Image (cartoon, rainbow, N blue to C red; front, side, top):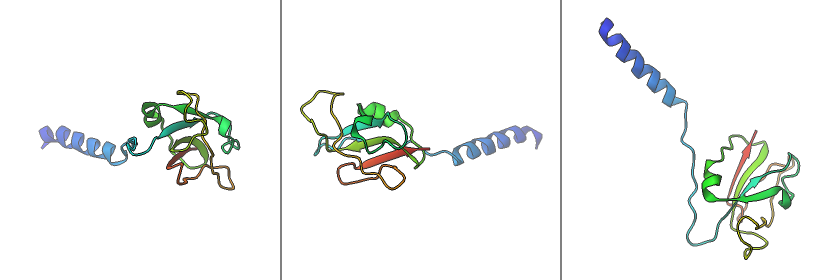
Length: 116
């Protein structure tokens, strides 16, 4: 029994470690529409200000971890004010926020992730 104890303990620890993790959700670009990705660079309360959002690449967007719902973090959108501008000089068209200045999902802003 003692020789199996280490193996059993290792399986229990491994199962416990994976039980409380979740994979990062990655977004893939929709080939039918142009998609733009933005990261919030301002301070909480300025989320509706489009100048506080900086365009980032899809890989940077997917790597950015945003785990809560109380402050702006990142947005994937199909709508920018200046689509002919080069990356990263485009500006998001609008950011809809709730009464607590937390960005909300809209038709144009199809994925919104917030942070604590």
